[in-house]
Image (cartoon, one colour):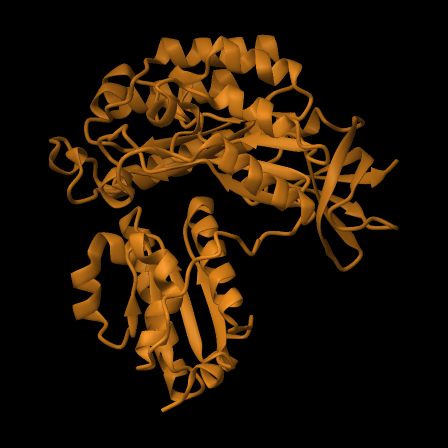
Length: 438
């Protein structure tokens, strides 16, 4: 049997799956593991302990999580001693996973994230005074940007969504806690903070009795070296005139917004348990563009919800064609057990969903190309996210990391995390651009 000092020499590696909110959870666990004294490694083959942070939002996500765990099992023939599975999968399907893959050494539900060090120590049959979480993060993104999770859970109960059953009810983090966390992130090099929650626009309702997103934005904007604040997952019916005014007047808020519309046919929206209509969606987009002419609007649509016939799909196609949104993600409806949509009549055949998905994706690809072509010759400010070979991988204010396009620029003297003025010279593919340093 080893002792605590020998245990601390063990090497720990991490795999993160799923959304940016899940990433923040893992970053906090990494901070605790590092604070305890474990060695952190990026090489899974040399790791003694492997932490796999899973996603369970959709069936495909659960399959990816299971496959990742199974792929890690052969590493136990080498240096690997413990497999730790965290995140949404054990929260949602704890008993099933435990029975299906008994080789997993530790399964942690979401409320046990702060106990990860204790659980690892216990798995080596050691006694140790309870480790207190240091309430910090080890940022796994490039240090110049970071995600700020402002709330957990969701109260919307959309008919197709498992999140409320996995993550629970909506719980906002206090403003002062978020400001303190952001100050620390900025002190460590972050220049862009990306606000995330399942529903960012509902922030503060549970904690303060009224929505406080604008107040939070104003407090974060006081942080001296913070340059960009980006908003993701803003429900269209909650994008108020007050929020638009703040986005117009506050130079730190990116002219970018993610509106998860999901569909535009009113019957489908009602079946989804969404709280807006097509007309309201159109009005929100119109008001945003009038208030902020250069705003980039991103959205997502679900294709093939039960009851979506060809006429309703064509209505969605027409909306996409007319609105010419900047960035759009399309997803085939996934029938999730336990959700209201699971037992709905008129389920759409898989091949029809895939056919529609391909058709609408091609339409958006052409829109994106035309949008990018209109950028040729324009000068804009960008930040360098990465350097690959002799090219700098950049983004402008209208591009979110990992989900939108990028701008390729010959690196010259450019450095990661720094901001530069560049001129767009060419469209690269449908979604990316090329430019040159000004």
